[in-house]
Length: 145
Image 1: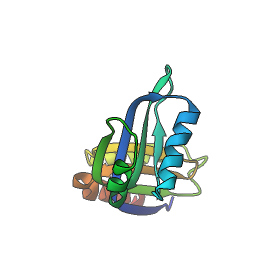
Image 2: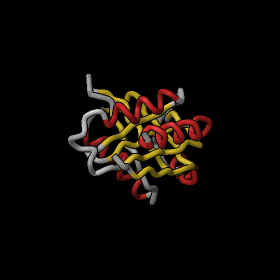
Image 3: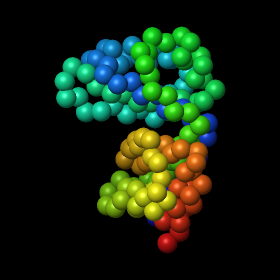
């Protein structure tokens, strides 16, 4: 395995708890954000257990004020100054243990991971700035072996 590992810095995590789980409501949230010309990167929604859910997404720190001044979010939970570490490898699909290797590396760094998103070929983790250096080094080391 020879994954490509990239980093995005100055990332804000926004979490909305107890919002309607209807896709129309969620669609409206992202349409409103798009109208502000704010780019959303990672998106994660909790499994729907009722008519309410939790939704988390990341934006650039520079867009936070614009988003909060123009949004109707009620009591968003905001965490700024984070970094996204993305691990991309087209061989990830069909390779058992790839995610385990990434998560074991983050665990060895005792990282504060805020959100994880995946696809068939990419794992992205949002870590605090304080835990970034050790987490990044641990992930690089995991794939050097």
